Image (cartoon, rainbow, N blue to C red; front, side, top):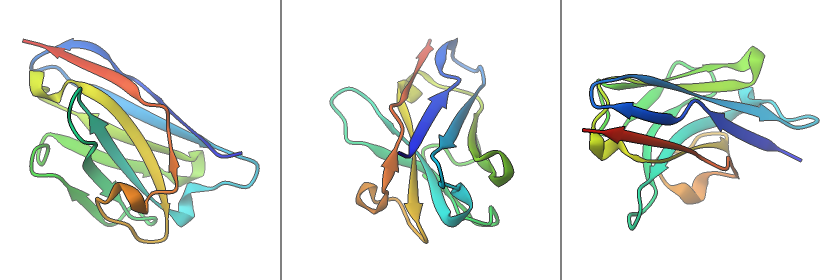
Amino acid sequence: QVQLVESGGGLVQAGDSLRLSCAASGRTFRINLYTMGWFRQAPGKERECLATIGWRGDRTVYADSVKGRFFISRDNAKNTVFLQMNTLKPEDTAVYYCAAARGSAGDDVHQYDYWGQGTQVTVSS
């Protein structure tokens, strides 16, 4: 059974930073064969892809809304993916999810095979 568990969310003020982690587990599951992505979903809105990182970690893609503020990274040895979020804004308030896709993947949620349960990030003004 594959599990992705996000952590690091919370309540912060505008301008603060947070670092989200996504720990993957499963008897034979290793993220080194997967594209990993971070998504978010605010109430009443569709799930939005924020950042993706290729299995080697040498290819990253960001949504315009977070480019230059958020940074995705991965530690394949620890089976963990991170999202460093800087200069947070109230509009960043959402539930944040990590996801894994076999092989190459983009920003389409349907390309992802495994999802975490999400972690809430709330940014106050």
